[in-house]
Structures are given as C-alpha cells and as structure tokens.
Length: 113
Image 1: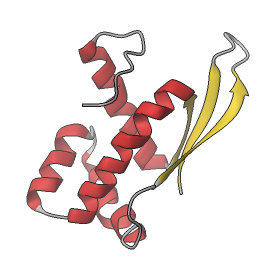
Image 2 (image 1 turned 180 degrees about the horizontal axis):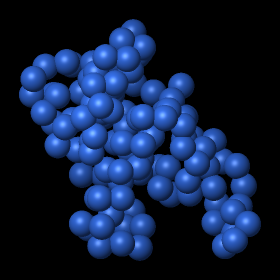
Image 3 (image 1 turned 90 degrees about the vertical axis):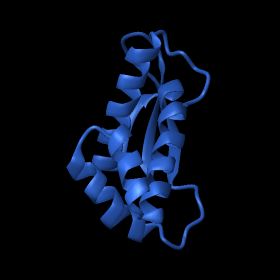
Image 4 (image 1 turned 135 degrees about the vertical axis):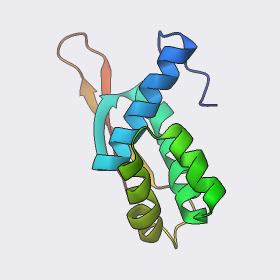
C-alpha cells in the first residue's frame, strides 16, 4: 500500500491514478507532476524495479498486477533491472521546479537516476 496521502481521491480512483502514473514513469523515465504525487510515485516505482531485479515468476506476476502495460513490465525486467543491478535502492530523484502557473501547485520532476 502506498503512503498515507489521499490526494483528494477515493481509494479506487487514487490507486488507478498511481498505477497509471508509475507505468508512464517507468516507460519514459521522467515525469513532471505535483510534489505530493511525486512522493507517492517514487517508492512505488522503486518497488517495481526491485521486483525486476529479483526476476522470478512470482515477482513478474506481482509487477503485472500493478503495472498496466505488459511492454513496460518487460522493459522494467530487462533494461531497468540490468541498469540498476549494482545499485541498492535510490533509483529515483525528485527535483522541485516551482509553482504551476494555473493554480500555484508546487511542481516537481521525478526521474530515474
């Protein structure tokens, strides 16, 4: 279960949003979003990369249960797992980029290190 931030959504809507954002983040490697969403996305993405490093059938099925696209799971298990094989965590970086113009929400960039 992700952190305790509710992000103004009900549980099913929040989980669907986080699943989609983690999928897009792992696919592209970089995402611009609000700071609170970034703090929720980063640990979930790190968990998916950790599952990719285990590379067992059970870990692949766990990743498929969370990530919404099978090609992103394949990328995570083949490319990202080998890229971070020697690294023990800390695969993501959150950088604040200032307020959004429309509603002054604090924005951040989440990227793979």
